Length: 349
Image (tube, rainbow, N blue to C red; front, side, top):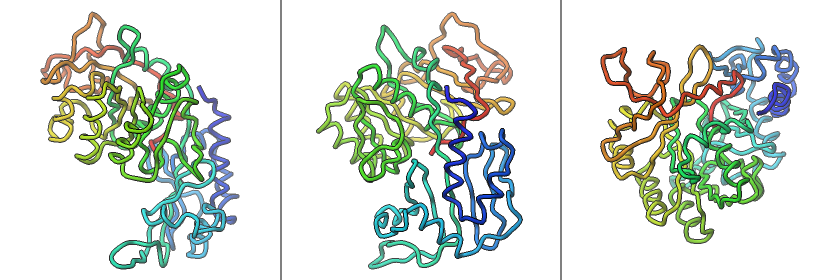
């Protein structure tokens, strides 16, 4: 597991993407707060803030200028906005070190397609973090007879899904499994100049910069993976690509925004995924008293019932998987409540 010093060092590297005048105030932040900062947020004419688990906090009273916002683009692109033009059309670029930098403002367009920005009015520097070992106690709970099972990682936005998925990919690759990653926005690999800046393991192949469904099909055809991973299933095409991979016998890892199985079942696309049995394990991430609790459950059959193993359940509605006895419903009996709750783990990229 990464140490507090590792997380502070990661924060300090992100500070280097800020305009020079804001670096000093950012470095004065409390050391423990540095381990929890998820983003720097800069808005023209407003005081700059950091995003913490409990919300945004001003770290300098000096309003951000347009010149400073332009300098963020120059720093993040290594003074070559032309080199990151294709990525900037999507509103963000991946800076050296694996930090994703997003921009808002007045967009420039040609023939109906966005080509970049005429003026930048806001910027967000997301501090993506690698937490080696966060999946140590999760992988055994989604493994049956020595074989890891297809798993869907579920949490509300900012729950840490991408961090967990990245470590699952790394650990599976380290065990010798061939892993393919469909990384549309580069949030898992932080690909830059063809090189992943995040540690996804030695036996991992990545396609980044195109739609997840297209990347998944390219990887299936070309790389012969044993495991296919993608972050945030958002479109029907993503679901169909996962179905194709499952039909080929490929194990699936993916993430989704949600608050439990019942929440997923109210959404047609996810209901079809679960009805078809594409995922047999659900990893739910919930926060209790500011800490993350990881709960692995087994999804059984088309009715998405949870297998009730002979393991005690914490029937106090703290596990966050469906309604519990406190609401008058039968407890789903999680396969295991895993308290890996490091206060420093941050949102997904």
